[in-house]
Length: 246
Image (tube, rainbow, N blue to C red; front, side, top):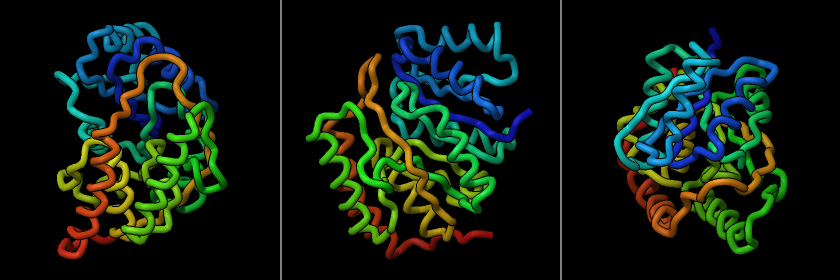
């Protein structure tokens, strides 16, 4: 039994899901994996269930949801599952290898050994570490994070990062049912809420590699939600009482 759980949301990731699971399972320290699948019509869930039955009994789990319900709700679902099953370190990671599974160890060490409550796999804390993105998307992402830092008044360089480690006490404290955004704004809202609650946040440098297989889920609507959502978050923070670290 390990106290580390990696949550991986999936939708039509049959090209990647088996390989990403195997990559996590063969790391030098043990991680369990929870797949949150949003009704993938390509058979992603069937691949996961085969691996659960044949190879990774009691280490690989799946929650199947009906239809595309959004990245944020997938992670909230996974967080609640992790709390219920008493995991101490809960990770977010993409299924498409844009996040290097080996960096899970660095995120874990930041929380387990360096005193962080939240560890962020950061593309921008030590320059711009992004591979195979068009320059326009790199600039959009970088300046979006700068915009968020300025509006919200946080010192986090990569505010939209989706490669994370949370300690259980963070997820138990920040009132998950009050996290409302679904796309990239979800990642911003989680970090901002952890910051307002007074948790220690550490950025761990990573290299982000654009997906090779499968289809990106990024859209203009998701990006605009993040831009407008930041203003909403700031205004709401003036009137909201955040729970504090116990």
